[in-house]
Image 1: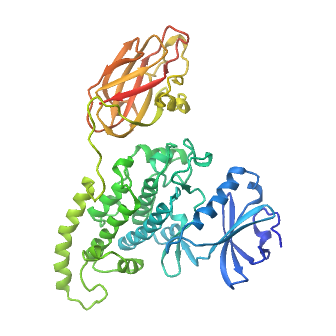
Image 2: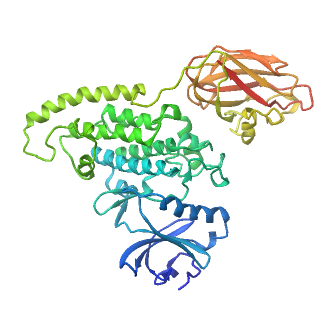
Image 3: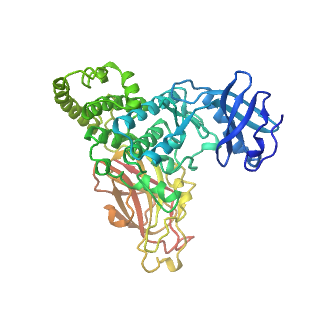
Length: 507
């Protein structure tokens, strides 16, 4: 029977799709698709059937995204990824058939149980991390890692689902282009929140947020809307997990801190390296807890030998003496301290950043408008800021036009901020502008401040600034730099409106 029109999806119950899958009940629904429990009449087993909603089939982007999910998930074969069984299209509506997971989502488990036992939370993070390693190895980044997309089956194992907004690591199509933020903002990485390209490191960040939620029972950032939450991921430091969960070890806290570093250069370079440290953390937390419970028992048995050695012997044999535990615990304290210091220093077997040559150009990653209160609205043609770092002098970022070339009362200026690829110390700055006169101050910061007081002044200049070198006094580990315009052009073709065609920095 062909798929019929539907509003809430219930009209499909009882129908057979693809001459094989008989729909039994709705198990989930979203804006793009409805998920049903169905019965595979050929193999006589339950399956999950995801059918695209009729009202969105006319949207070419949504249609391609749905088809992409089928192609992406079909590439993957892993114990902790929900398996795709079949896919097709009927009566103009595509569908995907998955293995049916009898259980609950990780989000539901957290909501019903609150914070999870530490070893269990780490175990689930390892399983999810393993799924991401497999996806990244296949050239896919998930882009929407969240507990709602992790299913816990009847045996207690975690399985990652919903590759609906996944993209190939080398892809550059319009569905995931720079400037569009896709994914749930409760778990979104800073670079994705800023509309920049995402990589496997973005998934690592999201997994770190999921681990934080498993340990504390709540997401780290809340706001009035999705945009407010996304900006907190960009600007604010993660709350201290040990303050909310004091029994969390410093080693585990350090791993979470590295997974959720704002700058990718400070983050784990891959899901595999994060998973490796989590393996060691599970053994350490097992020793501290004095035993294993739940899914941690299963995951522990799959750890590599070097990680299992960190835990006391005889975990499967409860008759081991307390003395064995005590001796092992003493050793664990020393090993945990070593791992903690390695994670803090970034020395966990990953490649290190290279030294930079004085006078060399500093690579710029992204940009934005800085127009804080009072007097500002945080916009100021923010959609144009990329023009100031695109290496094209024919494009520019411009301020709004201010009457009589004067900022209104309470507004001290307006700024253009940029973020570097990695921490940098800038000795000089240069501005290309068509304006004949302007006054600017150059500021720097390690993290993106919310007001001018959070920035450190590095230098400034006034008058004819086009192609002028501005000397700076800079620290070596600044991530953000800002051109703060304090006096607007009074002459030229557009008085009262400042333009920056290109902004550059040198060491």
